Amino acid sequence: MPFITLFPFPIFSIFLKIAEVRKIIVYCRSGHRSVKASRILEENGFHPININGGIKEWKRNNLPVE
Image 1 (cartoon, rainbow, N blue to C red):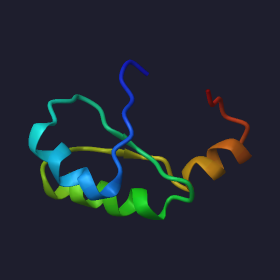
Image 2: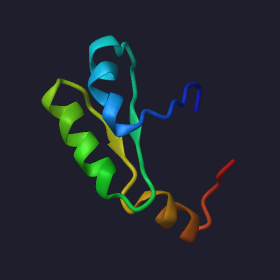
Image 3: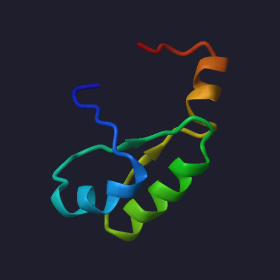
């Protein structure tokens, strides 16, 4: 992935004002907060990719992490 940034939920609205990105991948530990974040992005015209189940599910499926 060419560009990855962690945006804590409280500063998420700032991100929406300055974002000029092509793909946004949203994830959290369990998948619940990322669903909320994805909805906010969609409401603001973005097309996020949400990692269902969060990073816990990602690891459980033996997918790569750094």
